[in-house]
Image 1 (cartoon, rainbow, N blue to C red):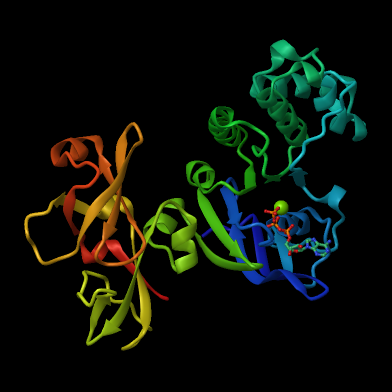
Image 2: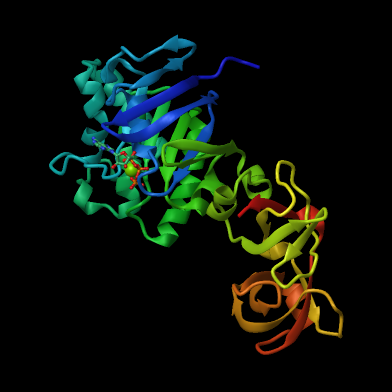
Length: 354
Ligand SMILES: Nc1ncnc2c1ncn2[C@@H]1O[C@H](COP(=O)(O)OP(=O)(O)OP(=O)(O)O)[C@@H](O)[C@H]1O
Ligand SMILES: [Mg+2]
């Protein structure tokens, strides 16, 4: 394994009694696209600010290329933090906004000209170089801000909710754009987002933070398929949770029926648990008199490629969501009020302590 670009070792940041970052370790590789996810107040911004050098550490260390950078001031770190609100200079043209960082570094005129030209190509705004920020769309301004952050060639770019101000469609475009840029320039990105879908689309790996603690760090697929806690399971994508109890080696639903589930380690007889199962892992068919899990269709919701069914079942008081592909939906032809049988494979479940 090559040396990681960044190693966080037991990093901590306390503000008085608040443990904003509560002692965890994490390696980030060169060229990774890494996403930080977590509820408001979970410590995401604090962590970025520590990496950028704007917060001193209460404990632990941050290594870049294996060297402790705790004492290195922000402007000496090969790190750039792009803020939630990316204030561009309104009186300067796009090209001047992008050139600003290099001018501060006293680069030569010819070098600035060349590098700004290259950056404008990369962010695909060469044709608008002479415009002022208020003559651009939201997505274009976003790209200028990126250009300004990237021109100094940081090893590490930190982005705090970079797409937060954009509407849904533009957000989708910019997600792809960011990925393209990262690929093209080949630098490491750490991005903070509230939007779990965004993290799944863009990131090589995702970290889920809760109350300053690192709950899980894995590829989007792994977090989706193998969440390590109820919190992770709930955080990414849609998840059904069935309350149940462990009895005699079986998982017993609230209605007293045993249900298919993967028996977890570390939980014992009599424990209250939840069985987590994804909507697309459930199978439904019209009710034919079976004695297993059953329910009634409360509502159907058409989502273009798939159909979501909301079921009231005999397993829990909470409705369950089932996702059918267009083809499955056509075959089963279920609609509101229909009685259904419900099934799933034990291997597609996760069981967590309740
Ligand atoms: N300068 C500070 N002084 C005291 N407490 C702070 C300070 N900065 C952050 N905190 C606290 O630390 C915790 C983490 O804050 P942080 O800004 O890192 O959260 P976040 O995950 O970025 O949240 P959001 O998604 O709302 O931006 C919060 O409880 C916050 O109130
Ligand atoms: Mg924040």
